[in-house]
Image (cartoon, rainbow over all chains, first blue to last red; front, side, top):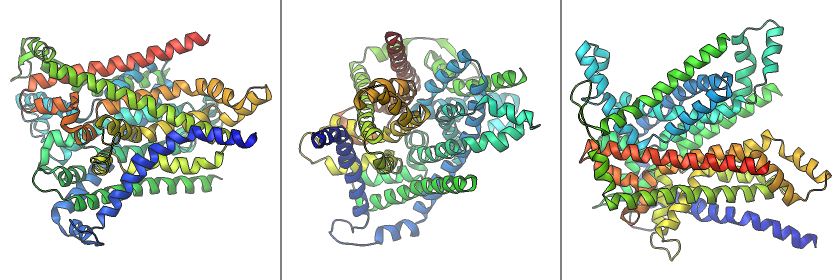
Length: 282
Length: 262
């Protein structure tokens, strides 16, 4: 009887296993294996990786992708921290209003976002016009179609996501902790430095690695803004698989593996810091 | 009091920062010209143009379908798996966590390209584009759904709750799905909403896998981007309102659940 029951509950695990096996593990392995293969032949080679690191175009793609991802993730988490702190302190009505704004804008990414920023800061954008009319050179001289311009659009889509991920974590901050710190003579700043932020650190780091991965994988915003004129990893990968005339699936797979490694490194650093943090505190 | 005020200021500033690009896109769609600081020539012609185009309406319907289906499927899959992990095999959580983290590393382009190149010539149902897309989106949102379910489970202290329920005579299945799940549902609904908006806004995956077989509103938008700025902005506004409707639907569902419990 117990045996039969044990088999029954395993059935609940089956859909998960099937999904993961067919649409996560199998495609992942295919990409990895293919990245070590020469084009149009069976065999083993490292030539695809040598090509990536010896060509300036692809080095630039890696640098640009990493820079824009790290910078936008950091900016996003800082803004989100204050957003979540404010939401936590606000009344229920204000908080739910704020949450709905965040939810609403969290899907404003990709092509719509690129389009909105073109209206705002593009060559004839509203802020550029204002800058020109009133002689504000910081505005009129702004170039949206650059690394900095791209960074601005990336920060925009990081903020709602980061805030939505951080707000629930603030529920774990009990008002009593604050009172205890105040009773012991600590200021608000002391509270956040010694109690609040350490308590939130797991959520902050987890969110940070989500943001990094989110920016690294972002494709549509950059593509709508700059088409193929800007070297970013996802754009270069897509090119290798969807070219109408020639496709370089093996080279594209190697690029994809490099991108995956970047994501894995960010997750690894996050886990390492978390573990060390736990050891120090324990 | 001072704290309340400063938090209100922060919320207002962030809301303005987030809403300005949206507002401008809307204004752009209802004016014929925008060559100076202020636009001129109010019109609704771009919306009329959009809603008389059956190709667009079909694309929009496809988008709505593909944004809801994978989220429901994925939530059920994760909850079922979590039931086994929490109730019977807590040791499996480490493996499940790793499996649910992997999609981080194969997001977007990588996921789309690898699934397509693997199954494009495979037998049915794998080569079916809708099937492929649904599965791809399930994998895409897996980290978020898993993390959310897990965070919420630990927030309600699930093992403790389970034990209490069992002491009071509830079965394991009953305890998990009738006591723990309703408790964590509010938290999960938030990440479901987040997931719906992620899928709704996706372009890479649907463009790669769907291709010309499954044209969604995002792809329609990309095509109009280079032909008409105003039509694009009208389209962006419509897409946006549709997302809001989906979110509102989820919210009212959540509220109905709550009131029926009482």
